[in-house]
Length: 339
Image 1 (cartoon, one colour):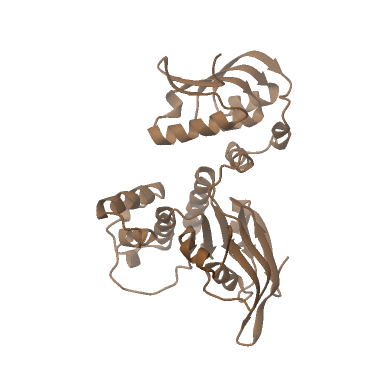
Image 2: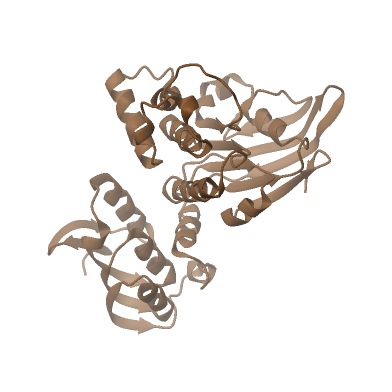
């Protein structure tokens, strides 16, 4: 086979790649999103596939493939996903360190996210807090607090009410200035002129407990993400529609924002972040006003966002049952410090 990966549709080649490792499959993902093709109608030919590649092929939705050299660990993934497969040679395992990092119990979605981060295909920015101290009304809320998130990492911070979770987020937003310490987003220290110019990369989804009857539509709330962009109105409308369709709320575009349910508001707020093309997302108690169905929907939305864009996400919450659903790394904020 001339190329490392060949994908065909009705016997016509529609995609090829000569890249190495797992990059051809990432490139195929980009191609499918751009061309809006159904992966289920495609036939994939790959030179080598271990369990990692098999998880990616399953995640992409491919239903038929031929592999020149396949590992035995890949076969259960194909079979569980209902993929019709054939191969030329079968080996016990592909000699690649990545193969050892893909656990047999890992879902194809989690494997995709893990591999995406490993490949550096993330849109998020790193986040850091070093020896941060914040005092409110003579009370020490944060005490020499340290936090480090890699680009594209997701984390939940939990703790009792009044522990300082919202204050921590406001430090990252530049709304609260620490008495001491350093707060940075990406390569910029929060509060500097360079950070101000790149502030749009950080988006905030607050608790939906604000009672306001100001007449604003859901679509107008989403368009706030493009405030100051100087785009023509037609282009703004296009970006708003794409963001709202991705979060399943375009049917609400003309509805009054304040008439929406908690779950609908969360979808609209997340659409605003997508419209903003934020690289860091900060969530403050996102499940506080959601029912069980709304919480489950939010889990699905967040996972899809991580799989497709992989922004950096920091969330504060006291909802331990919901935190367990996310399966993200978590830390407790207690006594002004993370533990």
